Length: 567
Image (cartoon, rainbow, N blue to C red):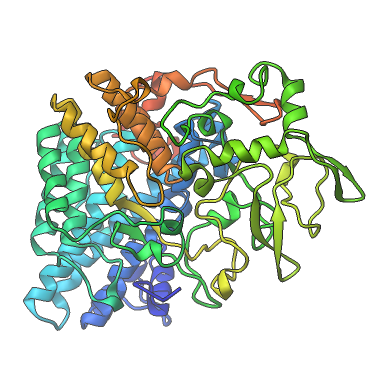
């Protein structure tokens, strides 16, 4: 992939900014902020460090894993947030602390730009643009803190970390005050940011990214009319459209299409690898680098993909008894192996493949389904693989080996094929841009606003735009059969909920959606199993999980912080 906004210089800058106040240390090999900010190139490098913080695992680097908390994914170990799914996490949890500290590091970097950019030799117009960019990113970081923790301490550019670090003990602001701060930043950002950047600067925040994020802030606050007005401005700009190829949207090329409003720019290459670990944690052993599939796809979610004609899917249409009898599941899915090769496929293989072909096309684009194919990588060469369900799969035999011998659905979306033509060289840095705001998401958020405002017909029309994507072409809601009917507010909401799940799967927004809709507890006591019926774990969700705990380490350092309810 092309090198976009993260340059080699910016990566070096990122390393020097690992601590909030490293720029104000002056050893022989480091620059103080007063020595550094001299020209536009310096301003740009500092701004790139603000962006690059998004790729830290606990900031947005594991964004895809958050679908485990919204019921779309399942998994194991901390990268899948399984302790959160099972309700075993606490105030000392490393992921909770990492989220808090990682986002505040991003805020500190944004504040650093705002504090110092006026010293750079460049036009006032450029200075205003850099300030707007920093405020967009600061708003994104604070909005994310609000979503996970509620009200939080606010530190703006008036706080110079190197001078005030030991005194940074602000109490938590009410969430309304934090939101007000975020909206002010976004208003200033949208006023000064460009509508688009040139090719060399593709991926940096734009005017419409700021407007779309403003709409999202209002949506989460249930201010639907204001949110709708923002989303309508994005649509009216004419700059964005649905990409025809849904599967290709999450591969090089599609990840730079006009559907992307704001995306994390990921890259690979020896010495320039700086990306997110979708390959590592979503890919299996046959994926480049021999990966761990910590984050897998829940069978509960896969079963929600409709038939192509819009009917709800039912396993009993194909394999009677499979929903309740594990013996039927094993007979349907599991092959027999001998000397590392398939001796006998399950009798239902042909029927399974026929059934997949009759489902919403987004299912096959998102999920590696049993007995479908995948282009893997083994022993430094491309390996054409079949996803066979069987114990003791051996790598290098033309089958996908699943780490931990899970017999589960795997991700196809965001997972590299082969070595991506040489673009990937490190499984921890997948060179596929990761969307944080894209056009389909905006259309569905608009639909949610319209539905809440009592405009069900308008909401349905927006849902149908997403379903009508050329590579998807699912029938429109209210287009004839009774099973496509949705006229009441509750019926339309169920359609929005379904469409957001199947359209945005793997992008991590289901957790925030379920919190916003007050539906988290519906996942409580849900059992996660393999598709052959093997039990894995039970979810535990209570009302406390709508807000994560304030990390105990932070409360120990700042006695003015109060804890969230039930923690």
